[in-house]
Image (cartoon, rainbow, N blue to C red; front, side, top):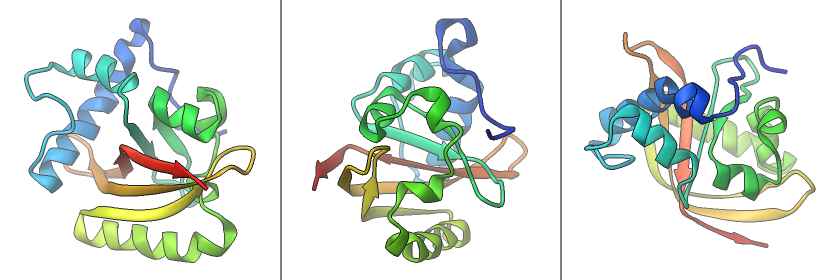
Length: 160
């Protein structure tokens, strides 16, 4: 299991509002757009994002990055619960033959800060394949501007 795994978002931990603040602020920094309504405070945004009808995922900075955040839509799509997904190396979300392309894509994100309109095939826990479209992938920066991972968001997918 990843050493950076978070407890599952809940009322007790404000739905990981501190991490969601990093997701939001980094998204705004790179894309000049808002991930959620900018009038929401971090706790409101975290609660909303966890149950949003679109996918939001992030992974850490380990040599083999592990997911450290997933909203309910992401967990459902990937067929995993919080504990499973936050112990899952993100590279395994793509098929073996697509992993080199995924690695190049993430290197491009690292260099540019973000990419928009990514399209690719992902694989759920039990091998169910799905196409994600119009995906934004961005670098995460903490409050000091230090790189702390990458995130992705998309609202369009179809099972193959």
